[in-house]
Image (cartoon, rainbow over all chains, first blue to last red):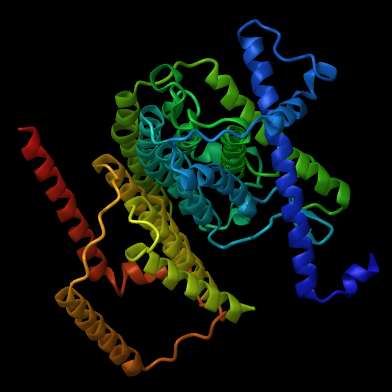
Length: 348
Length: 167
């Protein structure tokens, strides 16, 4: 390993960044595949079925079979679609989910390398910027399809995502008022003083609001308006098939994982656990790996919660959804900000 | 490295900006809106090169993430038909040249009158988000509030207009 230390800092930085990007993307895509099977098995449990258990032990090779199937299917493009946007939309929907990962600290450090791809000082604003670009994939897919139901799905999702983005942005403002920084690593530092320094306990209202809007931003039930099957026959992805459809499908799960990673970082202490000194940056390689494991475990727990909710709750009606967003969540979020501000002012 | 990035982003900004208003291949308003998104993203890239991360992030969140999505929304609801090409008109061309020339002259004048040197490409700007917030709420409090009143007026106007239609 000595040749690594002899490299000049720029090359070291480039090498390690490329390595981290590669590992993060591969890990995300693997996690996406296994989230799909987790969803199918959990759904089956809840509905008293067995679910896919034929391919490999416990059905664990099912994602592989699904992937091969998607690749081998004929890539059919309907004649009436707008070709350029039809090709562009599946790519555009996948990119934001991957880009979000860049600022999430997924562990403390391995050796001397911090386990975050880009430790930006405006980390959370970067994530919001990327998340707000996610709407283009859906809206362009609806537009490209050039037919009624996908178009309605696209329009609905635009309105929904813009509305809930506001509530989401307002919900995290108290986090910065308390932590005093936009950098995600600092926010984790702030939460590393025991279980009750986790912001989920300090700011329960923000946590609940952010949790709700996270469901809306990832288009998951009870907010899956863009693809309400019984009204829109599937919504924005009706005209898509084979690998392009699979891209939309993967993007949904990638977004779920990305938003869970954000919730874990902002509210649930990130890679820390308040016991056995796991809330300090790792001293050796094994503790470093363990902390990555803790982070992944927390993300998996939140993803399972999102899946569980999907099979427990019915879908909102569209006007109810808008009403909840604008008339309930946003006023509560504003009151929360003012309340925390007054509390901080009284304390100082 | 930084200079290569700067020039390619600047070229991208200008090129996409041109394609927003004068795209030889398409008269589709949705295409124009998408090139506007590209323009804004490359502009955000230029802000990043200057070390102004906050401005870059806000640029993306506000313009690419909200304003242009609303543009798309309106274009799609109004029906996005390919617009017919307008015939070339000497009078309009002359007016366009005049306005562009006047604007260019104004900008050049401003640039030459600038006392401080523009920051070198790649040099980090001091302060960041905290400093910007402090400036907004102390030195620039009045302009900041006036801008928000303008937004409020626009919002009240929208409510009044939409009310009239309902009655």
